[in-house]
Every structure is written in structure tokens, then in C-alpha cells.
Image (cartoon, rainbow, N blue to C red; front, side, top):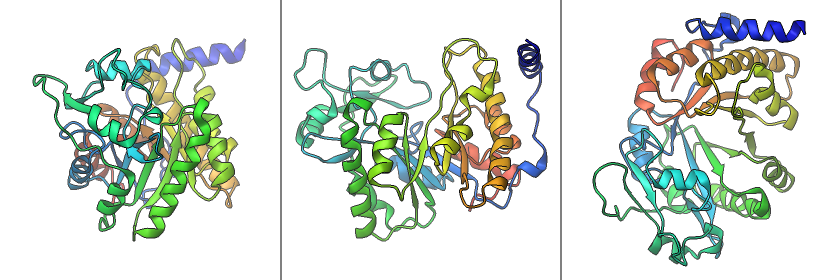
Length: 335
């Protein structure tokens, strides 16, 4: 009972407080701070396209996040929605996702090509899926939909690119397809001269285990996002605890959506806890370090300021130029 009252007290203190920095000893200003363009720079360009990645780097990103799916004929493509009929995919299609300039444009309901990417050939995907402007223009954009190899061709000469977060969109029921994507990453990493370090990212524990069993040498992250409702204890959604438990090198903490009551307050509390926990864990485990605590996806200037001030190790954002200015202001190393 005493612990519950303490949690309630701490929640209200945080809710009515301004953003408070953590002790400076928890912040490593010498470590590279990761400015990760989320799908590139989707506020200016079409998400997950080469132009979007190029714009993100020009705007100050030193890392990128991109989404990978696998077609029926085993082509790895950079595309976000594995299943166009999933609830989140439908919301994105209707333009519900904020900030972005374009929305996905899959085939209409009842169209025979409106099905999971893994059930489509590469040619069927290219011919039937596109993007539209989120507001205004209703015509399809006739956008490129790059393959993973297209990305490696482009990235080979990008010295500014330090990390790439490959978000594997494979769902748990098709977990056996995820290692096929990782094999292609391995093949292309050998074929091209790249300077970036790949990080394999997934929301699904089953998919993580399948990938780590077959490809144990990658750096991994299991994404953590708070549930809906009222959350008193930030420890339950600690990305650092998850990384330590799964022996992952990266901890990615997703900012909760509006279904979480006081979502920004909840997120601040999680990050505050995780910054301290990562510091303590790394001191106690010198041979099994958590390289980075990364926030995702954060866009508001006020929130970016707060997270950088609290000592987070990097952020996936739709506004890399905004994040670079803030990180430099707080003395973080970005190059």
C-alpha cells in the first residue's frame, strides 16, 4: 500500500512539474547522440523513399529509421504497412497520422491486391500501391518504392550515416520470414562498402527470438510502448529492463499515444527511470552494454528539449533539423 501511495505521489509531482533534468553523471556527452530520421524526413518528402533519406541527412540526421517488408517472391522492400487492413494501416490511409506530408495509398477495399505484402509479388506491389498527399492533392504521387538493395546502393557513399534502424514489420504469425530479411541485410552489407551500423528493430518478442536464433551477431531492440489507460509505475514499461532481459544492445522507448492518460507525463517518467537504469546497468555489466536509449517517435519542440536535457541517447523524429539544433544547444555530440 505504501508503494502505491508513493507511485501516486510521484505521478502527481511529475504531472504538475516542468521538465526536470537528471543528475549530470547519468549523461554521457562524449557519446554520439543519434538523430534518427524517422522514415527519413516525412514532413517534407514521401516516407521511406531515397529522397526522404537524403533530405534527412541534409537536415542534420546522423542515423535513419526505415521499415522493411518481404514480398511473396522474397524481395525485401522499404514499406511500412505489412497488412493494409490492419487498424493502424487503415488510420494511416485515411490521413490520421499527424505531421507527415503524404499518406499511403493501397488498393481499395475488395480489390484482390489489397492483402499482406507477403502475399503479393514485387511487381504486384509496385503496380498497385502508392502514396497521396495527406491534405489537398488527391492524385497518386507515383512514388518510388525502393528495395533494400536500392537503399544500400544509395547509402554506400554516405559517411554521415552512422546507424540505420531496420524496423522489421514481420508479424508474429509469419515470424519465419524475418530471418530472410536479415539474410538480405547480411548479403548487402558484404556487397557494399557501408559506414553505418545496422540495428534490427521489432515490436514482437516472437520475431525477436526467431531472428536472434539465426542471426545472433546483429544489434537488436525490442520496442516498448505503454498500454492504454492510467499508468502509475514506469518500471513496467522500461525499455532498458527489456533490453537487459533480452540482451539487446539498444533500448527503444516509444512515446505513448493518446490512449494512455497523460501520455507525455507517463513518457517523461519512463525516460527518467530508464536514463538512470541504463547508467547503473552499464556500470555493473561492462561486457554487456546497452549502447543506446532511443526515444520514438517524438516531434514537438518542447518534448525534444526535455528528452535531450534528461540525457536520452538519441531520438527517432520526423524533424531531424529541429532535433539537431536542440542537441547542439545542450552540448551533445552529433558528428
